[in-house]
Length: 250
Ligand SMILES: NC(=O)c1ccc[n+]([C@@H]2O[C@H](COP(=O)([O-])OP(=O)(O)OC[C@H]3O[C@@H](n4cnc5c(N)ncnc54)[C@H](OP(=O)(O)O)[C@@H]3O)[C@@H](O)[C@H]2O)c1
Image (tube, rainbow, N blue to C red; front, side, top):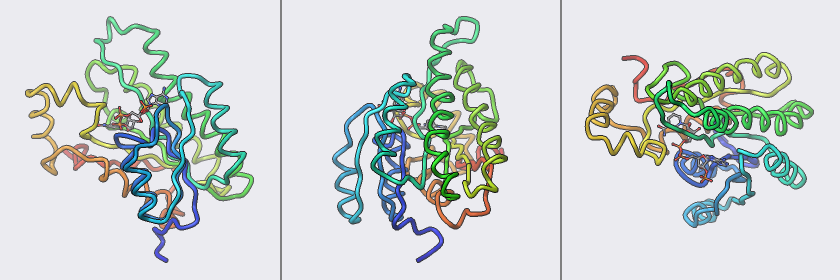
């Protein structure tokens, strides 16, 4: 057993079936965890195969994070059947408009998925962790927890708040055995960045500014989440861990 071993632990990953979430689910399974994906979609076959190859279980529970009732139902369904040791709030939404014209209904929906749903899930899964005095929560922050970005004011506001929420929960929950931390991915090659990747000028400019010399991949984030979900991070609380190829150091 290494301190990074997650054998016997059960993890919930929101949006764990594609993009960074799929990389996170794969890494948690490879580290020994059983995974429950909270998602609007089907479990991908490759994740089912990956779990089978590692003699772990993976299951899916439907949720629409835009709907607080759906979140409550999904959490109750999972907690009725499982003791959840690890919660990864990965799912997130992105909408691009210039700030002056940003539709406020879209502002509300981004803040609902990226912030309110995170708080609701931290409460739902955090309460039993607090009762047991044991649990790990990892939230997905962003470079835009630190920087403002361009044409993404709702996303930047939500991710700034996720970093602060992570610290606020840490202050209340660290002494009660629950670690709350965040991972802040840099520019990752996922569907969320389709618009940036399709823009040859922006894509090249971003790539040139990354000290590691490449965009990030889902597996890059998985290792950081495994660390924060493991005993190796028992004394790590309220930290926002950048996984950005060095972007913030530039
Ligand atoms: N990609 C990056 O460069 C980057 C950088 C920094 C931070 N992040 C953060 O990392 C996380 C994952 O990003 P990603 O790049 O993997 O994004 P993505 O490819 O766009 O995937 C978004 C995920 O969120 C889920 N989701 C969105 N709205 C939902 C809703 N209403 N209900 C349930 N699930 C919903 C999606 O599920 P469905 O399959 O059901 O649509 C999908 O699994 C997000 O929190 C994002 O903000 C990403």
